[in-house]
Image (tube, rainbow, N blue to C red; front, side):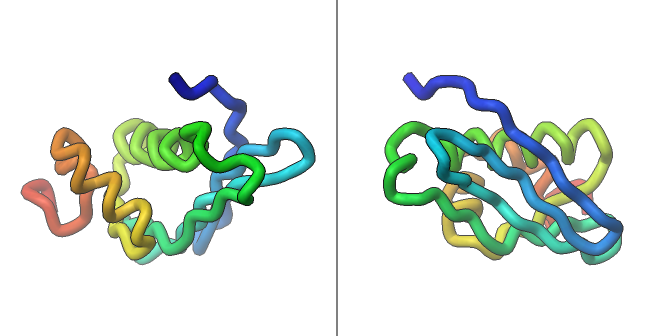
Length: 100
């Protein structure tokens, strides 16, 4: 099971990112805003941090914020798109879903 990591959120009105720093390396998921939609456009985990579930924890942080803050997510990053396919219970926060 993946260890829980500390995720840092950075945002402006137009863009932002979620980061996780471990062992001197940083993983990130970036997004840009389009009205009430956050377009998840990039996820990166350095080689030395891969296989620990970090990317999924970054996506889960984005999902939690979408539910708490009321925005939806358009997955343009292949990793985030694949995560949405594996988690149909996230349909409520996917842009273009039944709530849009």
